[in-house]
Figure: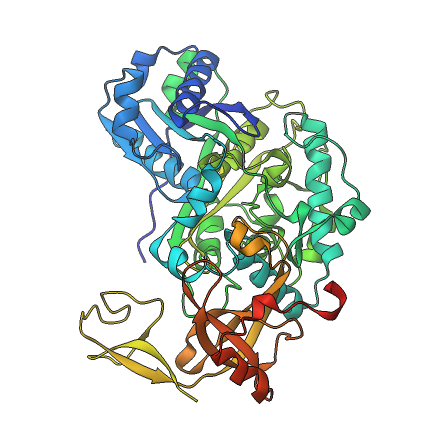
Length: 388
Length: 132
């Protein structure tokens, strides 16, 4: 197998979160444009400095990334749009890094953003893909909730995992959200709150499900040289990988692409799971975070329920924290921004002082993405290890 | 009992579900419609309490399952309330609550309920004892 080259000379800067709202009358273009404006302001850059753009947005349609260049008045020599849901952020990062590394562009803005107009979520899920419109939506019109309720139920039965085990993850993430104080859900969550919450699609109850909302997340990829000349803190990419449509013949999802490349990630980064200080998993549902932890080598299959008891707070100088800003389960899922939330938080954690909920001792972060429930499971996975 | 039919590649004989125009195994575009036994095994069950469509809301709560048929074809199916993972079921096709043909399943040894499915006694209209 060919070993990919390293990411020497690449800097990831200017993580920005445009505050989330439950609904919005703005269009997706507003969220993309304002996220870009905030990123540039935080880095001391002008719009004309940006020569590359990578966009992920469900509600941008019928517009495209080309429309973004037109609306926002930017001339570009590198342009990309990623329709990969929650894997888009990591995929944007690794593509932008190679483009900058090879000199195709110097400053690439990577943005995931979506609006949430009333009724738009139902429209999105009912027409999400040919397979899901025909063979999933007619079963109760629940969006992905039934798909992941079945996956959760199967996982719970296979490994003897309880609702309380899964709930412990939600409680832990909420504690991080409370400390970070930028999430839509900022009140502490107890395990009793979790267990007593109303059912949505059993075994999933209210706090197992992310809240669709509006918002934006973004970061810039550039050279170390440029980051230093700007005088801004930057994170480095130590490793990254992706794998799509893995184990497609499994009758129900119980694993996905992460296990295909986990060893390669750690070999490329020169660190192991024990050296990861902050882990950002894609938490569309607690069971998927559990599966990511297991497949990415943090614990054996079926043992995530025990493993999560070891999590520390992001501000602790020891141990590993998880979903340091609260994850989507506490922050909400602003469409495609959900795939970027883990990266922006990981960059903050690695570039000391940008988050009030971080530790100066944290050196390595891992971000994992998952997306595009084309039929009965997510198709896309991607992961990266970054360092501060 | 009528068998279910699914698309099958003429060249490599792989079943295709969901239907598509190019074989997922060999990329051929030549297909036949091939019968598959109605017998299936329940892999997992979920109970729906919240729906995005009014036409489903009137029947809440109802159960949906993931069923594996022969040839490793896996389908969603509406279930009666008492089915659990590991149960053996008969699967039929019925008109669903939102303008689509859907799969519905009954317990394998419940011949009466299986026959009732053929006359459209839809499982999403059957609530459990403690919901009535």
